[in-house]
Image 1 (cartoon, rainbow, N blue to C red):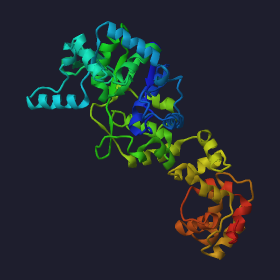
Image 2 (tube, one colour):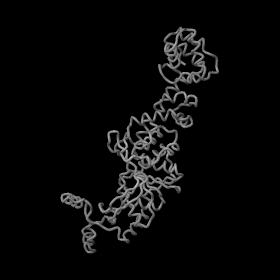
Image 3 (spheres, rainbow, N blue to C red):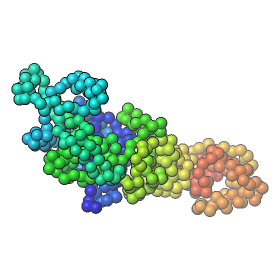
Image 4 (cartoon, helix red, strand yellow):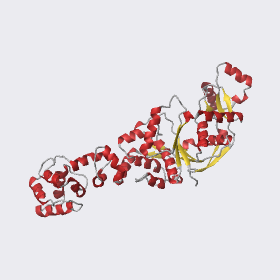
Length: 446
């Protein structure tokens, strides 16, 4: 495969949600796996609904996921090349003006349905003469512009679905330009793909029909076709479609909840495929794992509880250098031994805070038996402590006190950590150190 160029094209009209992540990550990982490039395109031709704050949020969300675009463009700054393409289509007779209002089109569709006909546009505007059009415009009507579809089957080999086809005779001619002259989705998307050299268009299966229309636009503009792939869509665990209205499933909401970005990416692309959902240590590992040919045709259900579990499993295997800066941002001047000691007990990264307090102090110990604690203190070895200190010390305490099992270990854990559960004390004891350990065994806050 030659070096691919893929793109993601969010509209800055709201926050990204987990469903968007599926398409974004399929593209990013595909480029990563094949040594390609990734284009971020803001589809912001809807000047009313597009907001700068949403564009900024998209950039923040991608950064959190670890996605770094090779190029960023905004459609709002590229209107001239869309105008030129529209002029070519008009000259070729593939773009024609229509004057029906929304109400008129709605009534016409209802009549077609009542007669058992498919509710597609009847191309009445093609029968208008120049005089008819002049009269309508004199009445104040402004045209919207439709793309004249050729009534044929459009076929392609899909990266996910295999051989795919759509009969364009069953489709309405798509509106490409609104009455106010602004562009809808299709034409800018195709023109940008041509202009930027996009080689692969990977998106949700809700775009299959769009692809048939866009293939005809590519061909009408004399451009080579990219390779298309349409993956299945994510739904909620109950089977509902995802949307920007589900704020808690927005990338911003997930980030604020403390889940791991790697877990979000892994679940977003592995669920609904033949590959088992599992934690990964890096995006490179995930890129080697994900294969579009393994994606199912059935909808993929996103389960928030599965994400929480996967996030914890992801955290448990992350190396220290992957979290060091984040720990510092939490005010934890930790070390690799600390991280390796506590990571297996964390559900979310900020849960490391109380364990740092256990290590660094001060904390109030819980002394269940002062005589037992005093004996244990008297047997505590001299430093330096290492991974074997805990075993040798508890062996000596067991021999001196005749205790074993929970009766041996629980009082020591409560004295050293103030808690009844937590990370292995063999790893925590060297971090606590002898001085603090002795004070805590004596019942002192340290």
